[in-house]
Image 1: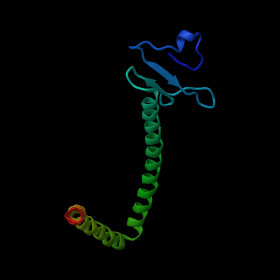
Image 2: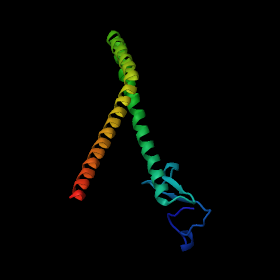
Image 3: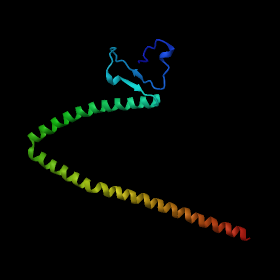
Image 4: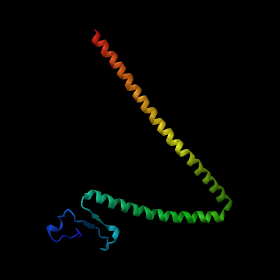
Length: 144
């Protein structure tokens, strides 16, 4: 059912097992499959709207990326034909960079983890040091 023009108030009410389809019309009045989404029972309208928004963003960015890939591949192909030696050199450099990244990525992750562990260690040491100082102060206060 479409909620665009409900005939009666009962059209707006939803049974527990009924799906509602919400349709958005294009400027010219036509409807395509990407301009509607279904609210399923057990899902809130917000979750369904977010799912629809995500699919629309993915569709738009996917089209944009496809256009960019076509233009970039054409540019790279023309460059490879016009400057084969320079293209081969840059391609080798790209492969070398990818090899370095393949080995450096786990190292960077390990260093970040080590940094986090050291920060936690320092935090615990400071807490323990403050607790010892507070205990010493309490002990001196009660001994008077």
